[in-house]
Image (cartoon, rainbow, N blue to C red; front, side, top):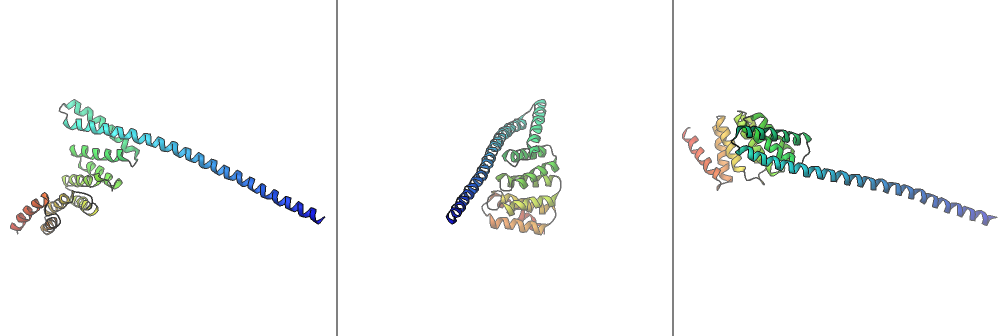
Length: 229
């Protein structure tokens, strides 16, 4: 009798183990099914995003070509037609807000168009937005210089100084425009009648970049300012 009970208990235990494995197997298969479905969805989304990026990249290249044609156009009607087309297409890309190359390039072209139209505030906003969204891009330092130039045109000298200084502080190891930015800082200080700060900046430029063409200009400004003391 004891042997029968023992055998029954053994069978019952094996049955429970098999049942547990069966249930877990279903769970594992279900999990694998969910994972497979997720991977398929991810692949579809990734492929769709890739196609959108490719389409937007082609579009921004077309806009760039149109912008070059716009700058060289002499016919007034043709120029107006190109401007309308470019403006509309730029807004379409920018409105998507996707942080990719097309958006970066669109903001840069937009900033330049506003600058050419002497819309200084809108120009600086486009350039600052670019540098904020794409701080590691080579265009970021260029955009900050352009934003500073727009600020100067708008007589916003403190903001111009801030933008030039951002180039010096954030891109000293990657931008060839540091001497330009330093010279511009000195020039803005001159415009603010802050001769001491201008001289200090010019001397810093000479010490750091003795072979730069901007350094030669800085030396000329130092001589001019020293003779006016």
